[in-house]
Length: 420
Image (cartoon, rainbow, N blue to C red; front, side, top):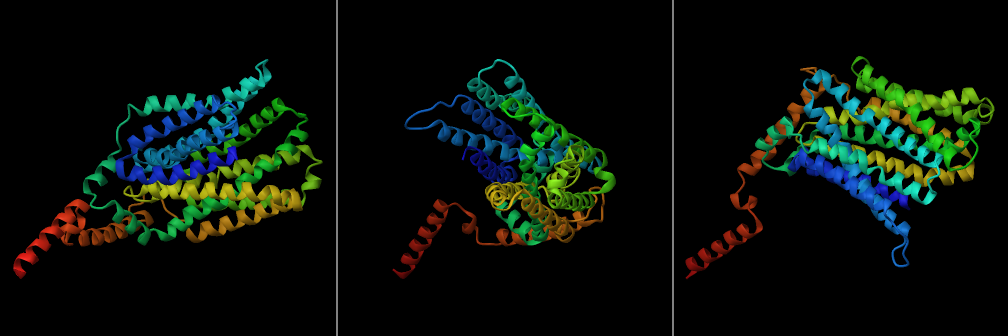
């Protein structure tokens, strides 16, 4: 229950803060999200057992708050990074580098727990410090962001905005195919991404780490280290390979890797070196592939009027995919074994490959006549038509409820007077 509340908190935060950021601005929300992370982390560390409000209920609430803030980080970090880039050519590397910090953050979190569990620190204190430590990077982020400025892209669209609702109506009419692509591929990716967690016990055994909390933490450090190279390969080659190509190639390779691991799992488990190589490759081609591009593409392709909203919806779809996997894979593993789950992951990754080719746009961010520009022109034509209806609609339709009631009252008085 505790783990799932953080997940659903992230879903809520991604949708809510993404939508709000397109209305009130990136900077304000970018400052609020780390505050929620700080509050959630500190409260989690201070949770205590009670007969009326158990420690697990408290942790569920506090982790939801933390997840709510973390969820907001997805659309805000992507959108802000995209809009502060000096040029379209550098935008992809800037966003990719921002997302690559996730790998370092995962490594730092596992190292903290490993250090705590390797010392004489009592277990009851260790987990509290581990949970509370999440407030440290969030506090640093808050300090830096409090000195930041609003992005030029948001300032420009805010000055010309007639109706935020119409912005989304126009986006749904024009970008529906791309939304299916970015949301669908993120959902499919996170279903398979969760599958890597099923290997933990096997990896621990193959490495000869034994059992216990410390060895589990050491295993987590090794896994975090495996994940890092893929992030920075994406940063280095994202502009050379292309977003869509990197995503479908990475998904296809993941499909092959999961199939091989599932089909020959028992045999591979007896060959430690080969198993570990294949296992590490699933991280490499996830981060040097769809895990990076699903974050990047929504931040580049969608127009600034709805960029954070569309990114938040896409990211929330990913967390829903993770929830599907977390609720279904364990029972499937118990009923049919880990091989069956890995074959399912292979099928899902293959679907992700096809989904990418069908729905994800193929574009270059600095192309002045490519899909980005074409879609933006369609979007602004649709938006202009919707806003034209507002401008030429009777004025009272756009007034507040109170002003509308006043107009209706005046109209009624006029009618009565004329009858008299």
